[in-house]
Amino acid sequence: MTHSSQSISPLRRRMIDDMSLRKLKPGTQTAYLRAVVKLTRYLRRSPDSATSEDLRQFQLHLATSSVSSKTINATITALRFFFEVTLDDHQIMHKMSTVHEPRKLPVIFDPDEVKRLLEAATTIKYKAALATAYGAGLRASEVTHLKVSDIDSQRMLIHVEQGKGSKDRNAMLSPTLLTLLRQWWRIARAEGSMLRGGWLFPGRNPVNPLSTRQLNRAFHAAATAAGLDKPANLHSLRHSFATHLLEQRVDIRVIQVLLGHQKLETTAHYSHVAATTVRDTHSPLDALSLELPA
Image 1 (cartoon, rainbow, N blue to C red):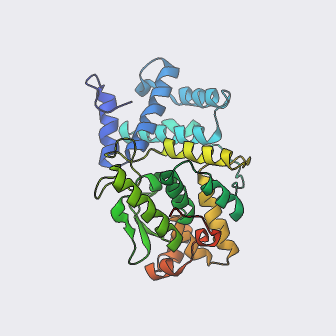
Image 2 (tube, one colour; image 1 turned 90 degrees about the vertical axis):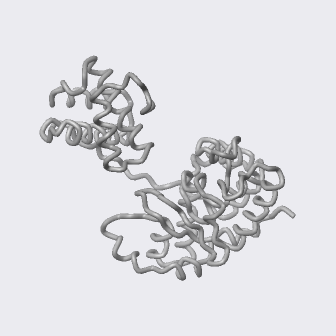
Image 3 (cartoon, helix red, strand yellow; image 1 turned 135 degrees about the vertical axis):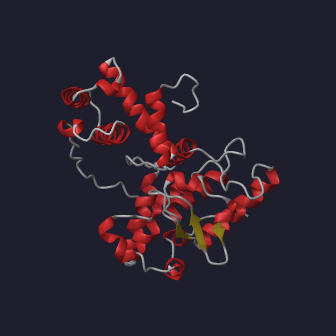
């Protein structure tokens, strides 16, 4: 699914233009287009000819095809954009409704498990990247898109550009993490695998960042090597970061800012937390006594 196809239809082009006007992220645009393609394949005709009953039957098809509630809801969101924005039809979606998603408790590692996982990372690059996910509470995409210039060792902050919700924020930079990142930086520069002013965690081609898929593979490889059998994923490091801070009795409002959450009902409570508060909060990574490369 690319936007550069020369055989692109006028309808698809209009939807792409609508998404671009609203500055939707490339990943969101791709997901929205895929949802419309999915509907088109189900209908076997152009999606702009769909009726409200067609859409109701399409949702029934998804629900009976073992599609997750999360995927169904994402599909409905994409189709709502297509019909209400691109086609300017605000009535056709009335028979489609989002599905309740049971809220599951996140999988959490205890500090010893985090230490074992980080020590089991196969390379210094992956160890540093996974430690960044835990030590600063970052999402996978936020870790992989960090640049060397985002590490502010003077103020002990990590600048996260365009995180979830297209918001910039400051995350904490712990002394232990800074030491590990400096070790990785020296090794990467000596190897020629990191460009000056480039990505903090480059991919195989240093022009490109490490992919989230590669980082997820590194996480699962380390978890397996460490003998951790919890049904965890890379996001579990972020959950663990927040939980361990709560256990340290860090103010929930500070944690909200560190995580970059943007819930409307809580935004006002966290907007006044200054960078000094972020800097003065100790990362749980520092309590691990992590073995660092010489």
